[in-house]
Length: 75
Image 1 (cartoon, rainbow, N blue to C red):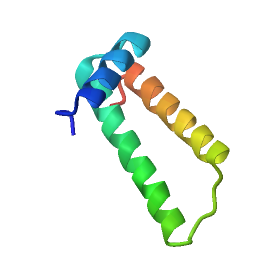
Image 2: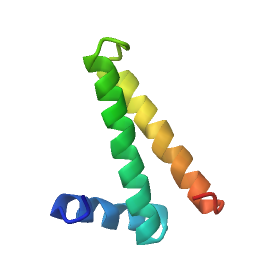
Image 3: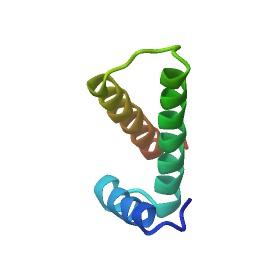
Image 4: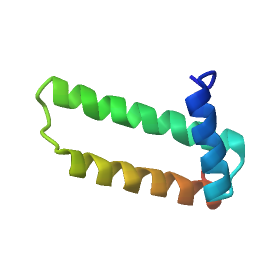
């Protein structure tokens, strides 16, 4: 996954924005992708009904929680 140039750019921006090490940002990106895949799967199999705004808010909160955890040494 990290071989894609787009993901490398995302990790570079995250490293700069959140002042975290690259490996931590890679972990956050991976877990974020898995989170979104899970939401998409749940929507596809009709177990959940979220709109774009709800998904965006969940994603923002989840990334924020992961970043704050990393800053506290929790990752």
